[in-house]
Length: 199
Image (cartoon, rainbow, N blue to C red):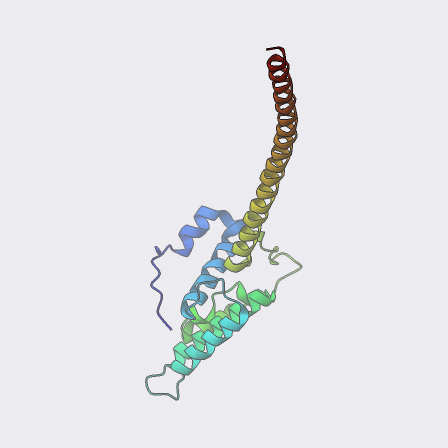
């Protein structure tokens, strides 16, 4: 399995929230988390769930703490990234995804996050459902490809249909022209025959 070198400018969460406003900040941080999970599992984003699982198993075997050179922290981050992508693909978006993912935090920050976590009060802290573009790269790309393919098929049918109509008109016009030419040739031959009979 090759490694992917991804060049992407690192933008801070505060800058993203300032650009997007408070309403879209959760969506941007969620897509950033998803992107980091894809990088951690060496994925492009358009693979199916089976490929995600295969890459998870390869990374888990490579970074398992029982193996020489394995890192327990990296292993836990890989497991959390896989669970995040799996839940995202299966549509199990829960409130714990709105917090910083496990593969991005240290053990100390994780215990602090658990201590700071509070339950929503009377619906005030509930998140509204994410917009369509936050569903992930595979869904977005797949939808775009289908739209382009259907547009291409529609244009092709229109083009071929108009060509067949034009071809049919040309055939009818050609048949009429050929009949007219034959009639003229017959008259000319009759005229020549009449002229040779007189002479």
